[in-house]
Image 1 (tube, rainbow, N blue to C red):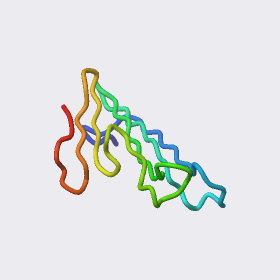
Image 2: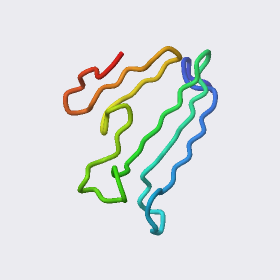
Image 3: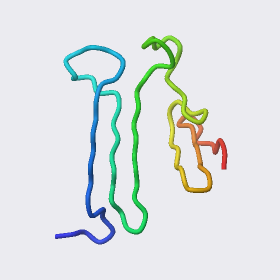
Amino acid sequence: MAIPGSARRLCSVRWTLGHEDDANTVNTQIAFFDFKPVPLIFEVRGLPRKDMNWRGGSSLFKGIDIGNIIEFEGGYIAEDAPSMRTARL
């Protein structure tokens, strides 16, 4: 039974990037939600900035290391987690 407003389909993949282990430490996930009329793609990353060394901090995307970034056809909104301030419209 479908829940009104829920995605018709969902596909999610996750994997470990950057280091060799037994795949218990997943650091990347991408999920596709088939909402109508606009789909949603959700990505989670947990990677250091350089050479798999966390001393340099985590990787940045659009100037944000931990937070939310929502992309649209005409631009994006980015909020960093510590202050949740808008970085760019």
